[in-house]
Length: 143
Image 1 (spheres, rainbow, N blue to C red):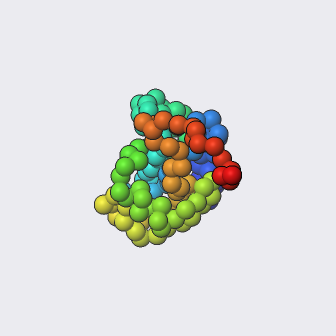
Image 2: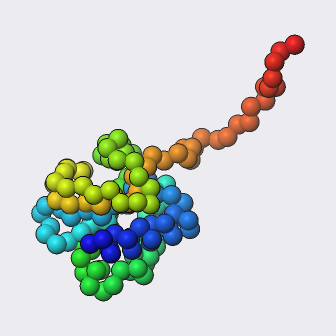
């Protein structure tokens, strides 16, 4: 399993450099799907074009995993950034381009038997609808 996780870390880093950082990138083994793993992803850039982003992530993952390893992957799941479970994950684990292992937990109402969290970080970018307005007040001491 370490080999697959290491390959996914590499793919996640490449995608982050190419498209921007992930808020969540994790590999989950659900209790109800033995031997089939889900790749959970969330990022601001994914929200802008879900279909295209899903194809992009799938292509990158296919590029790093062997055929046998790909058979272990059940699906890629996009997690909406306003999902409260995402914030709960960030409170539990903050990691970027690494590997935190979780056993027997619950996420999004699913019982998770095993998980590897590669990235779990809060989105630090400003909301898309918020404009930057420069400060027009002079800086420094009043004389």
